[in-house]
Length: 237
Image: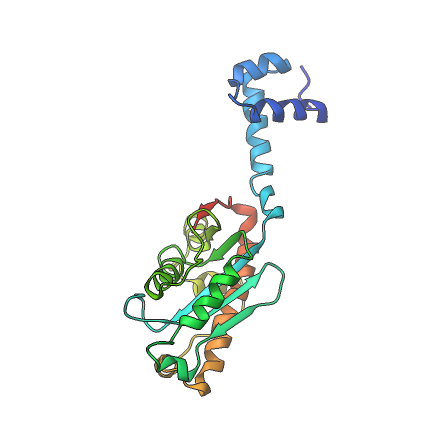
């Protein structure tokens, strides 16, 4: 029995594996004249090789927000940044007038964000499962803004959990993960800057922009470093 698989045999195996209902390994082995172990091993190899192939057809973007509080019913979104894979970063932030006007605040930038989100198939965040995605969904609901993507319309991948599963670090924070891999660009800001940013002061918003934009840039670099070692899962936002 030949150990080498011909392209024709691989094609037949793929067709059998993807058929519904899927035949048992023993049945596929009989049809292809192979052992059950050979079928099992080849399918494992093919799944490993193609685990992220679907990403080639996805519009992928890296996403991060800055907020005035960790809870969306108390605080607001100060700014957001989205970087399409290999593309130019888009950024929006509230103004001084908006920050001190209860009827405006983050309403404009939330509307802009909702429209921007519709351009992508997959959003990559860092700890976005428990923060970014929940925060913006809650703000959209509180503000009564229509059009926020419903569950399943956009997929989400949280790189935080990929780092936690794949790497052994003393901390799983983005700054630690990127520093460990030699990725430069993390820009920590002092508390005074965040205090003034909560009120939209113009003199600090440039620092907030740099911080927000750099976070999505280094997130993209981290994603590329992780990709050979992980399987990207499709989860609705």
